[in-house]
Amino acid sequence: MHPLSLYQRAMGPAYQRLAPALARFHALSGPQCLWGQVQVHAPATWLARVLALALGAPQRAVQGAITFELDARPDAEVWTRRFPAQTMRSTLREVAGQVVEHLGVARLTFVLHESEGRLVMQLQQLHFCGIPCPAWLRPQVVAQETGVGDALHFDVQATVPGVGRVVSYQGHLVVPPGAAASVGVSA
Image (cartoon, rainbow, N blue to C red; front, top):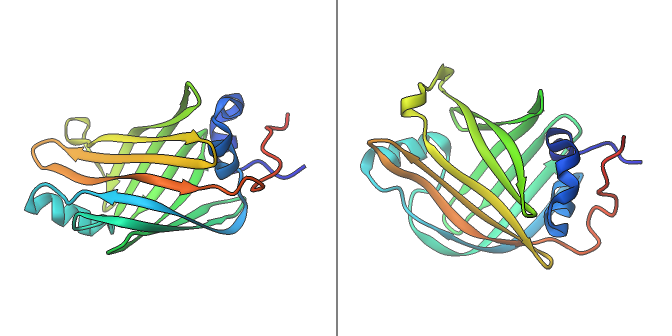
């Protein structure tokens, strides 16, 4: 049996309740490349643009094709999102049942939940340039995925109190039907 993926380890038995396209995507291993469509919204204010720049996040509104490159290893996953106007890269690790994402100068810690087959990522902590972000300043984050047929639909938004929308993009990736043949969680 294949080793458990980062998301399988972080979610435990709840992983088995994900929609099939999500389970296949999050069980992928090694280098992978997926394609789809995306709509990106620009940061809302000049300060939001500065924060987006520090994260390596998209700076302007654009719509079009997205290429998603995944390098899934047992210890970490590197996600490279090639938006129509910019590339955004992050590294994810599973730490004590949570997913820790390094994105630009930020370290975000998420708890993963399954809800009616969807994957919902709930932000627990944020460190910016190594400094913990106080709860009152922590961004409001929507990060969720749904699976419909062979498509993984994503919706990612981050809004900082008093600053506005920093990151916002929605779209889908096509997950090959034969990808990650073994998605079960082993005991």
